Amino acid sequence: ANVVGGASFTIGAEGASRVIAIQLNDANGNAIAQRASVLAYLSDDAEGDDIAATAPTTVAAGTDGVYMPIITGKMFNLVSEVDGDIDLEITEAGADTWYLNVILPDGSIVTSAAIDFAA
Image 1 (cartoon, one colour):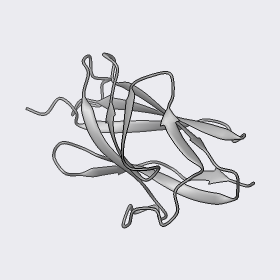
Image 2 (image 1 turned 180 degrees about the vertical axis):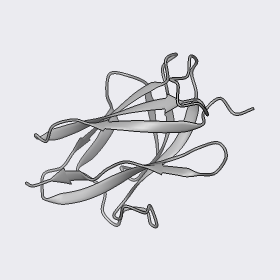
Image 3 (image 1 turned 90 degrees about the vertical axis):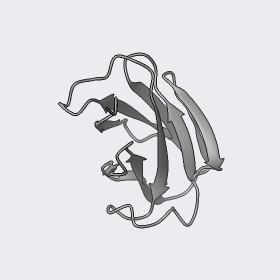
Image 4 (image 1 turned 60 degrees about the horizontal axis):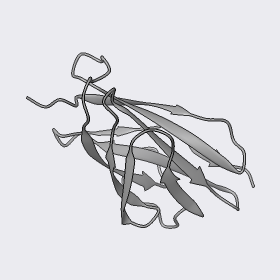
């Protein structure tokens, strides 16, 4: 059975950068209790229909988890800590909006609320 059955997001306050906390959950909505790997990408729309046309200034690992870029600033593999936590730090110099999409092991996609930068 798949360890990861869902993901939830907490988007930090806007500043020069924003921290997006991701919690990987099991199928019952409980935080997982082991490391897990998921693919993720930024999109320009809330449906996750595309990979973002323009990447943020930077995307980097926060304090939790591992960030491994596949397409710089747009698509990445993420590995959680043993409690299912992953943090991404997104920095943007201009004004833009992205959505973070996590591809779950069953192929379904969970999308965050808007990650806005007002510039």
